[in-house]
Length: 84
Image (cartoon, rainbow, N blue to C red; front, side, top):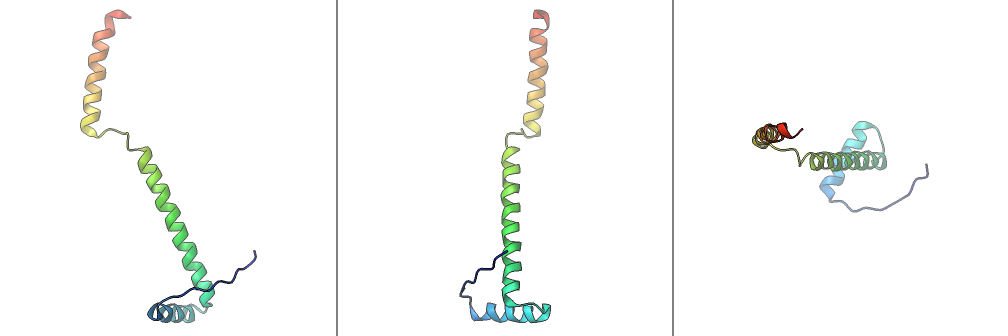
């Protein structure tokens, strides 16, 4: 995979923390930024997936709605029982 160089600007305190962590982990700052970007992107994808799952389940009625729906089905069966 080809690498692409880029320049970014970060606040000095953040740079110092990144530099210290990179030294502690014995990796380059570039590698640490790559790890951080990958993790952020993965969290973003996971959040979008969670939102999609939640949206898919938005139409599920709450317990009160389910109870009403059950009563309505029961009443409907009574009403049409003689018609079948």
